[in-house]
Length: 187
Image 1 (cartoon, rainbow, N blue to C red):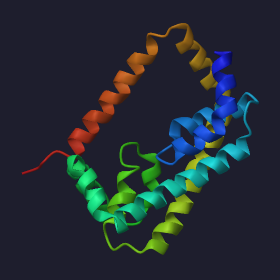
Image 2: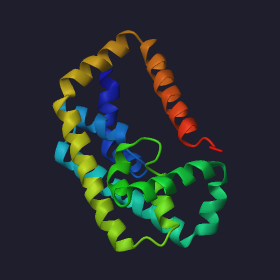
Image 3: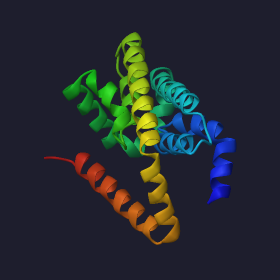
Image 4: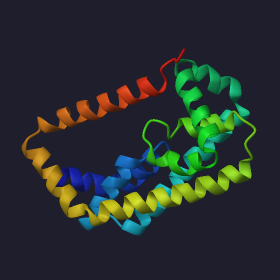
């Protein structure tokens, strides 16, 4: 386990940046725990996650706005999820930009859905930066201050490796059922 933490500390900032472009929750929590353990710098981790997360949503927005044909071709399988994102935008307005980073499963769809509309880029940019900042601070600091607990959980899973697949199956199933229900056709 010590080798894993050593590798994460060595390549952690690069991995954190790349993973945060498309979400980054797990990487940010890992960086927070590694910061708690003294292997990474918490401030730098939060800053990297913030910049990458905001940049990732800007890229999704840009691609949807200016490369519509390519984006629509790539999203053909996800039309219902994209429709759900549009409904959420209409229902919640600009608030959806602020909360989308905290809801797994819609984080990448909302910037794409917004990019496909005529939503003002400046307004999106301001809300996206505020949201990315809040996201990075909440999860970075939260995982740092919960570091002792999270390390104990990681050690328990390391001692009983059969627990990890059960957690993944339960989490994955819950997410699948939610997305299936949320995108279900209603007559």
